[in-house]
Image 1 (tube, rainbow, N blue to C red):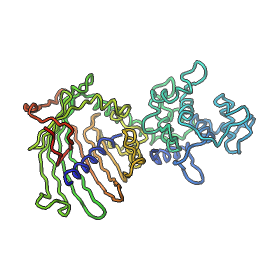
Image 2 (spheres, rainbow, N blue to C red):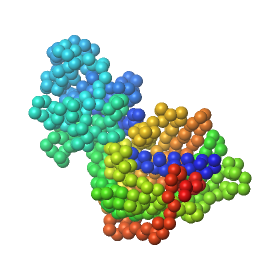
Image 3 (cartoon, rainbow, N blue to C red):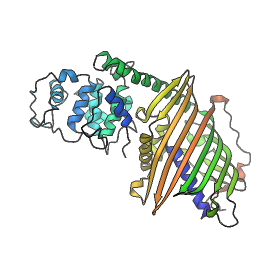
Image 4 (cartoon, rainbow, N blue to C red):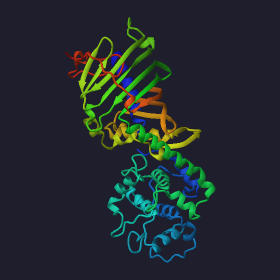
Length: 464
């Protein structure tokens, strides 16, 4: 029991660390930035990010992102739609006059009907200068995929199954940082400033943010494109149940990776370190130690995963190619983070610090877990990520440090467990300077047949 409990806790730590660098997200900060520019006003009830947008609201956003709101307000309503309440008439009139809407029918616009992700993506593409008319740049059916090709639609800002005003805010902010058609150097926000639709002073801070984000993504791509990497990580975590602390853990690690992009199963990984676990003595079996201090080592080569726990050495077949295929498009998450997940990028000299939205990352992790077949809403359990923050420091175009802090709670069968974790990583080297040395005794490791693999501390005995 004690051994399996320790496995479960550590597995949870690892799962969070893997996905957090990945339901509806919460993009209040995106709505705030849009409101500062006069592009997102909300309602009398606030932003209402947790409900679906209406067709009238989407039409209004399109006119604003076209930079034509002031012009629209001067128009007399002559469109044939008889079901508009009043406030939406100028916006619909502008779209009708410019061939950007034909309504739901010849005489109705259906302003209160929901706007889908596909429809809103189409609107944003039109704001960027792309056409979905016959012979144009895309068709309505292709809107999402075409938006993805431009970087307008990503895994965080758009939920096709449950599209909310939340996503309207996230996608609209992303659109402002997307180049307009025909000019790769001019993003939509700069065009709105140049056209006089958005005040230059109000936009300056966000344009600076966009420039820093571009530098950050360049550094991220550079790191992820490097086939070889040397990184150290210091992980610390503690687990409590109610008011009782169950355990704390510290784990300094060094990880070296030599990836083979053509055949990931031929990649090499070496991860070594020490794990120290202090257990609550009241939860330890009599006579068992409350403190574990153990050297650990993990290796991967030729499609086999090796674990050295000191007195136990075991191995198991593991295809990275198969794992990536099962994860599908989630494997693309590591190259760079979507704009909508980042709240601020501060710069001091050549150093850059990226601060993520805790609420957005929180909901995204649940979404990632659901896509991996771990939809907590369908289980007799609940995971609540209360706080997730991450910072990345960039120096002279290279990522040097990554810091992650998170708090989460898990509830199952009426019991709650809280976990806090920090992970500080330093990138020591990239490229050919990184050399991996694998042990010469890997052939002595025991095969696991139906056994349980633990990441650290206490395992089921591997079958012979």
